[in-house]
Length: 93
Image (cartoon, rainbow, N blue to C red; front, side):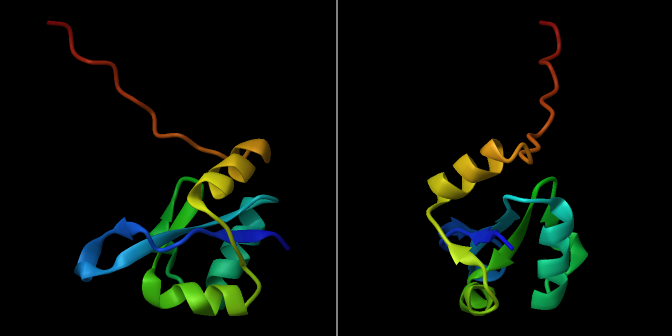
């Protein structure tokens, strides 16, 4: 299992800082880990779960590898699991 979590450096709802939870192996592995962690499905966004700072230590205790945000993104891309937002073209002027 290779589930990764970055530091809770992202400001978000409820005044909390947030982390990204990803797998560098498969989305199935990621969904299974998130379910064991108790993270709701609504926290999933294309290729990662957004998790509050209150979940970070528990994720690591369950086996997630704590890595930098840069390392998390590098490994997600290398695994071919990165799902970027589709950008809409700007309307003609």
